[in-house]
Every structure is written in structure tokens, then in C-alpha cells.
Amino acid sequence: MADIVISGEATLEEIRAFFSNDRYATVACGAAIEEARPGFSRVSLLLGDNHRNGLGSVMGGVSFTMGDFAFAVAANVGNPPTVSTNCSIDFLGTAKTDKLVAECRVEKDGRSLCFARVDVTDSSGNPVARMNVTGFRRG
Image (spheres, rainbow, N blue to C red):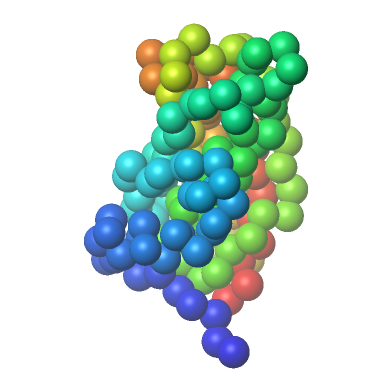
């Protein structure tokens, strides 16, 4: 089976349709793609009680999922199929609004590896987490 490549010319609707198959991020968590182009994405999530830990804060896994999903979108649009091989995340603060936003920028693109940074904030811009991701291009 051949790998599916998402054209760099794909519309936002086409990109959303492709990533709707990422059921964990889009259905279980509720993440939505706001913007996407080769090397960049912005995804968001409205927070609910199901995203909170026992202390009432946003569960760290939610921020991680947002970062991972933002990376998947930014790294795969207009590129060969790309998977993460290494991620590190720093939790910086608590969301003060009911919405998380993750922005990913691929900072270095190579033939088989790419390196990206994801910033997760609340909708007011308060920092929640920062993630560094190394991706492997399978194409």
C-alpha cells in the first residue's frame, strides 16, 4: 500500500478531511485545525471537564496531544509521510481560558529528518507548554 501524501496546495477543508482519520485528536479530544500549510499549523481545542485532572487543571496529556497533532499537520502537509521519533515537552503554566491553541513551526527540514517547535497557549496567549519534536520522513 502506497503512502498518502497531502499536497501543499490542499485546501483547509481537504486537510481537515484527511486528518479527521486521527480519531484520538479530533474525536476523543476535540482538536480542530484552524490553519495549515507546509511547515506550519494552528490547532485548537475547547476545554471541558473531561480534559481536567484531579486537581482541576488541564491534564498534561491534553497539551501533549495538541502538540503532537499540530506537529502531524505541519510536518505532513506538502511533504512525504512524516512520523515523530522524539518529543520533549515542558509544561509552563495552567490554561486561564477555556480554549487551548497549539502552533507548530517546522524549523529545519531535511531529506529524512525534520525538527519542529510547538507552542501551546490558552486563547489569551498565556503559555501552557512548549514541545520540541524530531520527525522522520518516510518518503
